[in-house]
Length: 448
Ligand code: PLP
Image 1 (spheres, protein in one colour):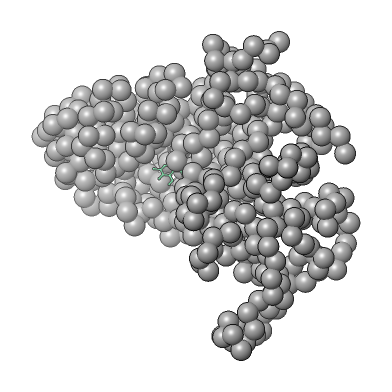
Image 2 (tube, protein in one colour):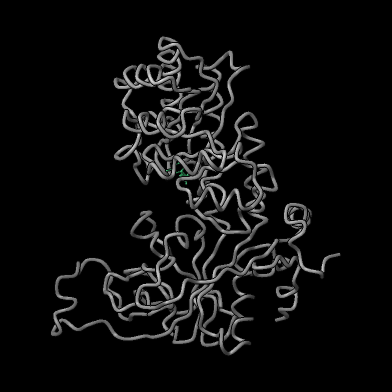
């Protein structure tokens, strides 16, 4: 197949890989396949795992947000995927940023984003970070405890504080309430202390937990936030900010948005003077990135005599072959350990051919990462073609959230690179326009 359309460079920004023009096959899977084909043409890259990042998808998610939650300003949670193109695109689209550290703040400020578009949304900050935030002009920050108030009073007394409250996150994939959020009973005491320290508390934030599939958790949290607005009033504050956090899931986004709109109407009917922001992370990027991996080795599972499989659950189908790929849980697949994900592979190439027949004999297989640790298992059991061999490619979708950002180089393996595409059609042109506009002065000379 012709791959020239995939390699056509579109924008060149110094220090960043080229942005590739999309292919009429809109589906990201084709982008992954074509990039893998391309990799095979270059001997040195022939077995490196890589992401394909579709910036058009990120843009689409932004339009979807604006359509469903027009009143709520998104502040992208950079921790989820601090990819330089994603950040540039979102910055160019006017999105704000939720930063958890000075490193993240520096990255965003370094892009030329105004500090007023950043919330330092970590309720437990190092003193030095508070000082540096003050220097950078990032004054909006969260807190949920008294010590934080003392630190801020000493180091950044003019900060605009947002009290992070505890909400019900019991149904979310990652529970954040185990670590952050002031229980409502503690709020009056915290606000009284803030008042005593002459601090400016401007509003309320919450996070219903990352990966929240239960829209009612958002409604319940908005109700709690309303009662904290009342507590603020009693403490002598006039709150003007509601931060509804992250947790948005692609599959339930429209339902969640509708529930949220209703809850906001119910609990904040008069909100002319209230700014509402959110901190979505995975919503923007999870589906925008796929990962292509190369099968680097294959072997039979340990025999019972070896002691390996004796304890296994004999009711489930046992893998009869183990495949080793060149990214694992110490790399991009850390999302298995840290983010409760269960990535499933699909076949990109079989026996050296990218034309994989739609039906081939399958067998139970397991998929492992490249390190020497047995914890490095990507998929304990899955169905893969019985003829899959070393050198073939497997790919994984939905790899854009909490994956590459937490990858390590354990055992000396490199972190997988990203091949960027701008997708196709009208929006593809828009992606390029926004990036060009935002990166003015940095582009290469091959621009039109
Ligand atoms: N805001 C804060 C304070 C977070 O801790 C997180 C995730 O950990 C997010 C936003 C992003 O959450 P999500 O990716 O679920 O939207």
